[in-house]
Image (cartoon, rainbow, N blue to C red):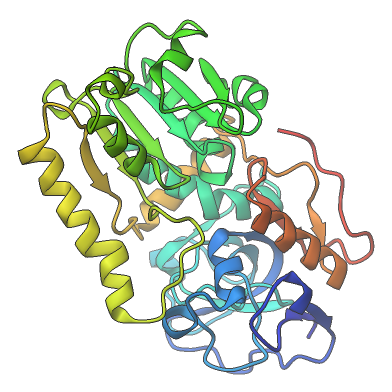
Length: 376
């Protein structure tokens, strides 16, 4: 089969299209064989390719096929009961990886039904791959937000943020602001934030910057999708003058800081100890510190340790999109082609962090590098 592969760790330059990769010939029990139609590229895909977490998430051998989140048509199933999952052979499904962040960028891939849903007819395969990858995560995060809150999404222009802003609007969130490198985009439909600032030009953690654009009350919740925001709040808390400029209310007044990324976005993770420090110990300390020692000056710290692998979340996400309540946000520089040039361009864009929604590779596009998608 055709596949995008890498023979080594490195940058996007390692990616090549081959035509003679061995098609999966044995479907593991409880999994399905999919003819792939579209793949959504994620930060984790770039991290795995770089080797920054090779001991923890790296492929068992080379060459390997990157990519984990996809949409495609079911070719075969091994011990998966169609009556229980709601789909069968010939149906189009979207899947978020649960086995490992690899294997999607081939003509055929094996997936688990644990985070897979049937795609409604009025959604394209590219849209479905995006929704499975990022909108499901956004929906998970939105469940931690109550209706009347004032929320700021830092790093709101990427895949999760672009869908989270829409879902918060559906929930009736009182005020939604965003920090992004393209603030104008955040205030246009379908994202429709109340306000936005350019984090490359402004200190978005300084409340005086928000006052300049008419924000007259501090936020109830900061959702940090970029990383490093807690360190900035700690700096402000250490100074009485700066603490008055803090954008979020203290914990005693209901203020919260919610994140799913470490302080350093491009982190490395080579040992279990590093993983525990990044995702467990540091966050446990902040959890107790913010609740019991500094609740009068800091928001309470919450880390989304594990996002729900709940197939009902996938179903709800796809249903919202099919009802035109949620719009899949595909970066307008794509969808990229299922070619060497297309895959390299897609991974290079994802690595830049200057994405508009989600980076997508379309398996149907085997000629041009890009497909000239609509800007969102």
